[in-house]
Image (cartoon, rainbow over all chains, first blue to last red; front, side, top):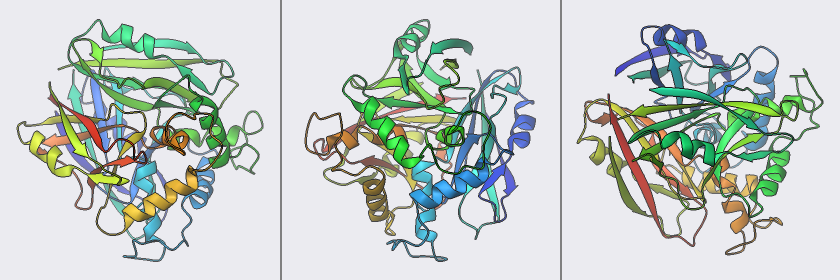
Length: 133
Length: 133
Length: 133
């Protein structure tokens, strides 16, 4: 297994597409499974279409599911940080993808994104692990 | 790794159980992990009990989380298509399952289903990838 | 692949941390992927920070997403059991984690937990499967 960490600049964006970094990593390999893993407690991974408005729709949806201004018990950090800690229960920080001949088998409209409501961490680490099989 | 694509007819159903296709594929193998992957941007995979009313309950729940008639930014396709594009952020299109002696180790009440709010695609492709280990 | 079942006492708790059992299992191995799988239809797995209030916040959030007292079609079991059957569609019972040199590569604030709204099953089975790679 080859396992590396990459850094992704998320800034204050909710959705950060890093599909190209993943494609580059997979091309060193052949057939197998790629595990994408975020070692963070306030962000998740998703496969969505980017560039057509779904980023803003997802921001609105998360604000409905997990309103920033509720009275959360988890009160460390910036106001609203309590809801950031619930995000990974709904949007998992682990994602496993099939790879054939070094190409991840995504659909045309699928991009791999970090979903991150926590603006206090502008750079995120992602672990990419490839199991040749 | 053996990786194949199967076609599942979802029609206009929200929930399509395809556990039997998965069992058939696993029986060609021994011990390992099965990755089930949907290369689609408007559907997800879940493990639920089918046949006892949870399909209708899930439909109602998704209509609460992701109402069809909100003003979504993503406005391609049929009315309500904007919410279809948020579904895979909540219900992931990737699912990995343990297999022993060719049998997936599901619980008695677990079925593998496609969850698909998008009625414009009545047939879906699923990729099944088996890592022998 | 080594695959074992462990029993976790969840009692009437929503959130049960079993990271230490997972660490112990991984330490028998080297590099690879760990699949954690719950063969149950009314519970899921999550990676969250524990011990800082997020358990209570998650309980409140699930009560908002999936109110116990709606009129569910799935009516077996205790009152409110209908919503328990929707939980795994939102919080998946399968989770795959990277392991290097026998150590799971969790972030400092991540714990592996069972999320279980179903108080009728005070002990849960978890399957741990390790693919050496």
